[in-house]
Figure (tube, helix red, strand yellow):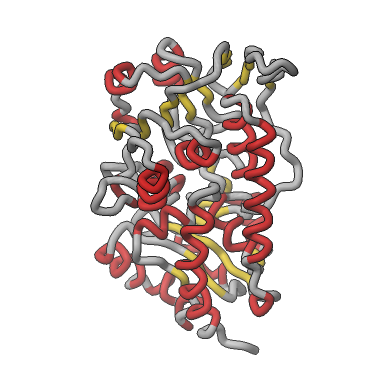
Length: 346
């Protein structure tokens, strides 16, 4: 779980905001060659295949540019602050940066990444001026046309299969491979698994939830368990409502990791103990919650709803990365506890 500088189009809005802890670390739809670092420390070329093309990284990357979500945080956690990153105004604080990125980079004494426009209005010229030797975009909405332009600038790592669709550990593994730091990336994955396991709340056991979204009045979507924001909630001990698999079969919305069921099917969420969601702004929230079918969802009617008003928290809890997990957990759990207290026990 990404908001951008302009109001996102539906699929892009679905993908933002910014997780089951996967056991397999194989990157689906992606093949890799090369050994990164040879025994004597020399760099070995690495080739990473994505849905949009192949990237061959011939030298250790030093000037990294990031697009989409999560790549900036992982690169920083691996020791390299990118020279540039796609701007993210929707979740940024008054510095213009996502707070966990600003805090970490400032604490290290590094220079903050240059911000540039991304998404459908990707500023290619700004990327050229940054003189990158590696472009990371494994969790993004990069188009083939954009990829081809970027690949002429520097090796570009895109998504394995579909835009905005990659599991959190796959992303870290891919970035580690591209940076020649696979072992360190594996350590990051293990550390995140530990953090999430330690954050589990025993009292949440047996409670189900659905993580929903809307793209305007009359719409209703439900994220799948593997989607980042759902997986983060699951890691805390809550269980995705099993109805999601039925919805996946009947209402799958390709490229969003969600089922777009429509408000007319809101009653399919009647057995969810809790509802998680987010809104673009307060006006949007009031408009959505005024819809009778929406308001009649039992968890919403009871007040068993988690909907952070801090857009930075919405973004942080929408993606599992080495920087967002510790930043969001301490802020997220009080909201969940409040909603759990409103669950009507049978």
